[in-house]
Structure formats: structure tokens, C-alpha cells
Length: 118
Image (cartoon, rainbow, N blue to C red; front, side, top):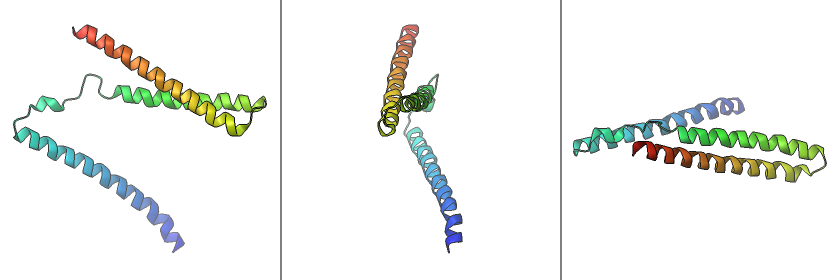
């Protein structure tokens, strides 16, 4: 029975993920078709110029900050700081700083886009 659960768990996990993705896309398609039938403008569904690049940048910067926090914590531990305090503190500090950096970067780009559109 143990061997069977070792195989079934990953299969069920991937089937569940596929089912969730399928439900999201099929319900989004049905919602769009209903809006079009009611007379909504189809261009409403077109993505913006940059798509979701802001979210990708935010995630990338966040993970870079977490990595930098781990490296800084390693050096702090090597000079005598307690490991239990160094790793969480540096991960949260650098992760938070990169999220703030991402916010500032997005606001700057948003203001530039507004001035070029005007």
C-alpha cells in the first residue's frame, strides 16, 4: 500500500493542478462569451502594452532580495551573530527592500507612460 501512495500522491497533485487551470480558463472563456453576446466591446479583453511585466519584475526582484539576504546572513553568522536571528531577519529585510524598489520602479514607469500618452 505504501508503494501505491508514493505514486498516487504526485499523480493526484498534477491532476488537481490541471483541473484548477482548466476551470479557470474555461470559466474565463464563458464569461467573455457572455459579455460579447450582451454587446461588450471585444477589445476590452486585449492586454496592455507590457502585459504583466510588472508582476514578473516584482517576483524577480523579490527572489533576488531573498538570495541577497541569505548571503548577508551567512556572513553575519560567520562573524558571530546567532543563526536563528540572522537568516529570517536578513531574508525579510532584503525581500522587503526589493519589493519597495519594485514599487518605486513601477510608479516611475507609470508616470513616464502617462506623460508620453498626453
